[in-house]
Length: 161
Image (cartoon, rainbow, N blue to C red; front, side, top):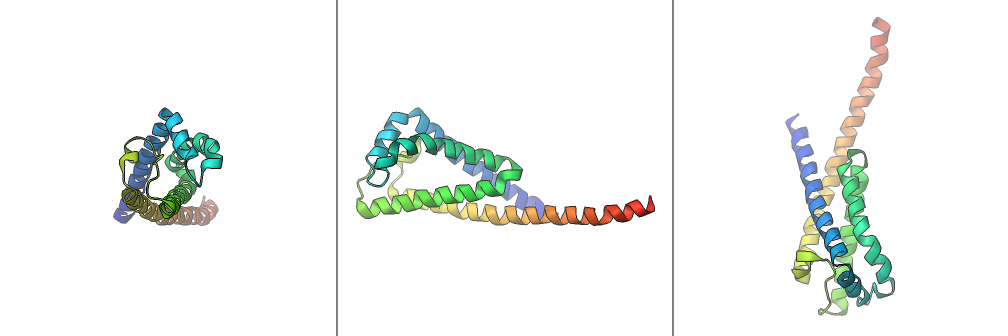
């Protein structure tokens, strides 16, 4: 029981950390939308689709937060967060392979990070996301086993009632 509570606390903490990151990042992108869109348009990778990315990305971050908050959608939210964070990290690595003097379009205080700090932060978030996926899958398996037990016991109880 204690292990289950610890796992649940760890899952909730990871959800909280992702909610802070994606809400802050998404809000920063929207409040500084013109700057964000301009920086994306200067990207050698995203330049041609910068308008679409500028509009979609903050809302994708918000959607992932909603998915993480709703327990039924949480595992899918973790997978979506993992894909997004891995994409951000690959994007940074690709940009660095082209040039080291590129603007950061993260928004807010995150734009003050160096590229190395971005990669480290993303790596930490990727790691905690993988932990969240593992723990959430265990949690779902435990719930499913409980319902299987209930489904097995109820018919037996009805015989005696």
